[in-house]
Image (tube, rainbow, N blue to C red; front, side):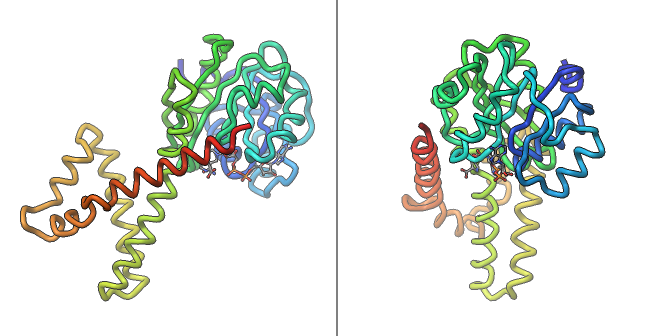
Length: 274
Ligand SMILES: NC(=O)C1=CN([C@@H]2O[C@H](COP(=O)(O)OP(=O)(O)OC[C@H]3O[C@@H](n4cnc5c(N)ncnc54)[C@H](O)[C@@H]3O)[C@@H](O)[C@H]2O)C=CC1
Ligand SMILES: O=C(O)[C@@H]1CCC=N1
């Protein structure tokens, strides 16, 4: 079923409409959710949120009644308060979808005694342009229709990868949840290296950014071609790229660094649980 089909007639509450909550709400609006079917609770509504709610007739900071789905998008440190806010929207048939980094199903269930079906999901910020990817796990209490609704909500902003073990979600968080930051940092580092190599800073910044944009688009449009093959096509034997890759692939190079970075993010997700 299309996202529009699954969302039609569904009632949703969104708890927390900051960066991620708003990106999701924009996805729902673009896929046909409208009117009081969406209730949003956000103590500090941005102008963008207010105008989106006005344009689509969403209820902002007004409603309380059980909903088909409740999406929790407060900071992990705000789970206690967010759960209190969410409670009035949760009935027996509600599926609760949490995108809180690190917070486990057991942490959520402990704060939401009425919740049965709980989905733990991890989207990423390209969701803001409909190009996100989300990893999701549903607890055994989640029925097929509830899972389909959760899938439809998440699919409005990009791809959804369901996993059958909750333990994988911390790793998903470390790879794709945090991953956009690694790519943006790559642009920053490439810019700084370009300056060291003699380029004016603004030019180095434009070159680095355009390179990552173009390489990302190439990955997207040539999805049947592996990243490894795309890399090999840039790399002439004995050429400049080979010289750089020799440094990047050294035993203390990018692969080792990325492993440590992802392990640190995964470890931090574990620390946020509770
Ligand atoms: N920013 C990111 O790249 C990603 C974030 N996440 C997760 O999404 C969640 C939200 O992150 P952001 O959107 O970046 O944070 P944010 O700070 O932009 O948004 C959180 C919102 O919750 C609101 N809020 C606080 N207490 C509330 C309450 N009791 N009831 C309702 N709303 C309340 C805040 O006013 C704020 O607007 C976090 O748990 C984070 O782990 C997940 C994937 C990616
Ligand atoms: O940094 C964080 O904790 C959140 C979760 C994934 C991306 N941002």
